[in-house]
Image (cartoon, rainbow, N blue to C red; front, side, top):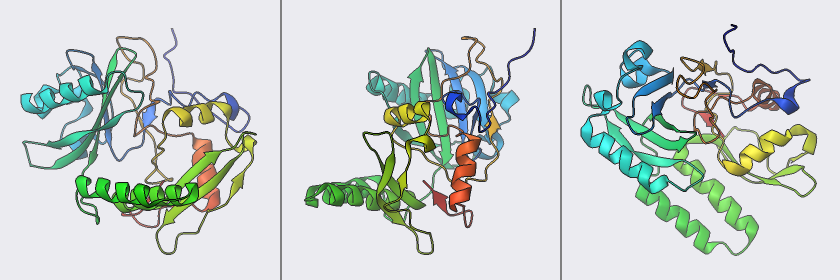
Length: 273
């Protein structure tokens, strides 16, 4: 029996690429696929040693409580109860690792009988805490008198909170094409505002996925994907659906497309969205 492999793609198969099951994540974070209920780690991906201080071998088969502690797991379960019935994953909480006191941003969602828990290193934003960021966003939205002003306010607020080098608000038009309607960017980053993309530039399955998950976060378009270990989920026997994952690895064709546009990371502190 041949072992399954991660989906591959080239320019001729781009329209059929299963982008929701890439078999990998972006390497700056960590993804843990947990058995629903027991929260035992069944799959791992990413920089587990750097982010969690553990190897994949040390994580697999263990309850996530081993690494987070009972109090953090209780918060995780509360977040899951809140999110049941929602269609998009939301920020869960900041986790304090007991070993060294590092803070992590955590995200959690459920699907296909699997609980997916993701971590990124937490970093302070120039704009202050999350509450202050939300108040600024509310102020932007309340003051908008046109759709254009509303979208620009959203882009400005997300740019301030995330520190990404460029934030774009993209609209799908009735004919399948798209246009950048608003943009916030760092000094020295080229503007894409107003650019119009033909329908052929966005495969049908990608458009459908973007309508389900409104955010696509790519800190570094030159990254090397971090594969899931094992590639297929042991309990379901299927590739893990990462439609709602914040760390989902994107199509290599898309990364090449962004690189050709000049959407490159200038330094490690710069992000591109």
